[in-house]
Image 1 (cartoon, rainbow, N blue to C red):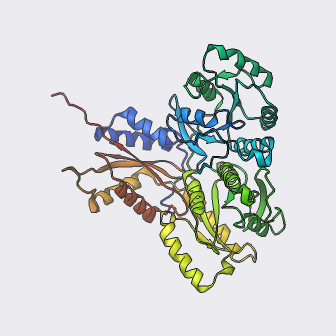
Image 2 (image 1 turned 30 degrees about the vertical axis):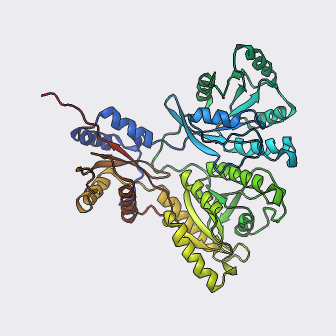
Image 3 (image 1 turned 45 degrees about the vertical axis):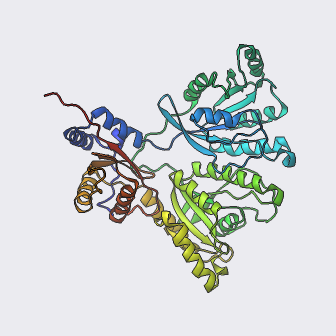
Length: 488
């Protein structure tokens, strides 16, 4: 794959070097694309991981209403009672032309765990994942003991914080907001998430403290051990697997609910090199805590993925592949991480279960056929030696770079051999493209018309066949040439 992968020093222009960029822009001009439009597309696609903003606070202070206001649409579930299950806790948002990830949290099971413990647990997970925090306080109620407890966590984290004084519906509420100076987190931003009052000023302050999305650097590897997140639904064997690869009991393994600490980061020697494993186990199920545990596990998984480069998703083969398994795999793909599927408890399978499992994989996991697969047993250590090669394969695909010249030769062959279907008397055509980023690979295709989703999937499949990309999501964005009236 040496001729397919390039790790040059072109960090500018969406990852292209100066000469390659100049040649590419000339091609774009010949095809009638506006230079600013092309440059903007490359810069947008070439951005590294988006910065993460966590919204935290005790129950019923208006966090989900604020999230919906920031997103500009109703995404987060809003109810007056705490305990509303949310499958998704991370969203992509934009303000003033800057994109960022938004992590929503909610008050959970406070009648069982105690409100302080519930909010503190969520805050720890959310702060772990975040580059900056919006701390929402009910200005009408004022600062409570729970708020004070969260403030201690925030100070300990060292993360930048924007204090949102919510439920300030008019000028009369400004005095209530001013009282929140006492929390020691700087100026309270008076906001009405319900009506939108003050949210723009608050988001301006957020952008001031939120780091810019880092520029992508092709082939650059951050210092230190590669970071691996072990994720999967509760009791799938994450802690057992970590203990097995470590060769010792690093993490407590028990079926009883209890541990709610931060993900455990472990430096482990494996396959002749050191890895940093992030164990996301620790939330155990009780019947009356099942929904809360699932929510905490989801939040913890999001935090671990933000820190990781590759996700090893454990699937319990003794049970049918569940909706929760699929959701966790989707979280890893959506986060843009390299992906390895580890089918655990393989030693428990009989021939009948193995037959049905293969059918489930073909049916339910067709969208991630590109992910390396390892059949393991965390209990016996079966096939643990295959885990490292699978992780290395996924990381190599995640960092693969296709030179623009080779990519356009490939695209030309596709268009000639498999043109887009004619729709409405017109036949859209891919004109040219470039890879604007890695980790994961991100491509921008410039076309003469709208490309249907099926054709995009076809192009992605062919990209994988030609250039590898095993173990990594591949992002394709398409820019359509705008019609311009030409003066005669």
